Image (tube, rainbow, N blue to C red; front, side, top):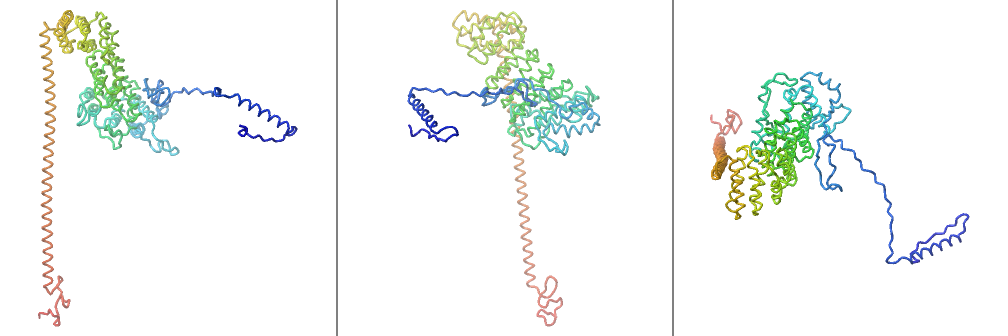
Length: 630
């Protein structure tokens, strides 16, 4: 151990003897030896760690143009959040970049109409779509790349122009709406949600019927300022949106050939129009709801964010009377899209619609509930979560005070069939006093039908009691008619198959009450009517299938005839080419034969082609020439 001790170097210090240094070193060595002797295997040491003061993290919110104040900061890999969270609040309004001062706006408004149109189409729109002019800001400043903030600023500039010049003037006469359609709908509105020609759920146009509702061809006005516009000949129907796209590839797997920056700029432009809050803008932006939802499935995150904000802004500006005819059908069509992000965005917008127009959504519950329920079983958990939230939101629009307390349990039972009886117990404790309409039945009947199919007879009895109490307060037979095929057959099975007599009696009483609610005299008449309706429905479905097959057969036959015609034309063309080649070969052989004959004749002749003698080279031979003939 002594050999491992560090050697000290004794350096004489002025005013201090080296002997004193040696004494101090010896004492230090003895203290070290005593410390080493006191260390054993059970000795523990505490190591003090100096704590460093951590600076508080900055709480400044992002100043991005599409970032909301309530944006969640959880990102993948962060300690506080395992995954990226979606923004749950409304994005802040866009801010103008060029016309952000009254003097600049007044200078623009002082221009002539042609100059205004030229500046909008050649300066503001290219900036909005991601195309920056090289020397727009002067020759001293270099060319800058387009960003989301700059595109949003250009969109806000165009919105300011719309507010001051006129909606119809800028969007239709200046052609701004047509440019937006070129970017967002290059293949037409019928091709959105993956329904292009020959593919998708509705090949060649699942949106055509919906878009025809939003036609603007009936508008007729002459005043371009304020609430007016151009003549009816200048107004184009939005149902005929079909313009060729650009050649720049973007989202090619989804059939999107327009640049991502341009699509983001078009969506920002739609959002800027909606933020104006003008009623004159609504007819032009609401029909583009489908395009905004379709872009929610883009591979570019900035485009998805802009599409989400644009669709949210469109729903906010839309009139509540437009929800059943324009907004909700588009959302239903979006739920058929192969892109899960499009489905999740459509379900989020359905929640927003339920909050804005609860009365209109309540009347549509018989169509909304089955459509949203089908999305609960989607393979993507994001779609499932959005479907549950949407189903709860739409069901809460029902104004029946007897059913409202049980709605959360019913929605939970729809998503988790094992808890069906818990929802039925909630309904058992309900005293039905208010009138039961079709929207209330659309919420209750799926759960009651599932409860009647359970093996437990006691649970079947509970469902029968609820059905009997509910049927007594049905307002009209038309309200319960769509749900008769769902309940009557199951009740009849309970009456015929359950072994307990009291349960059969309860089921029979419920069946009789439901039969009277359906407007039939007895059970057999109700069953025959249901069977007749089912037969008609099956026949109609069979007819539809046959028509689809016939249409497909006609297309295949037309394709076959076209292929045969092309094959025949190709065969005739090849035969004509063969004959032409044969004629050319025969002509070439005849020409070669003539040349050979000429050469043979020339060999036998004493004269050349010029008439000169081959011996003397003169046209008239001398007497001394061998070929002289006198």
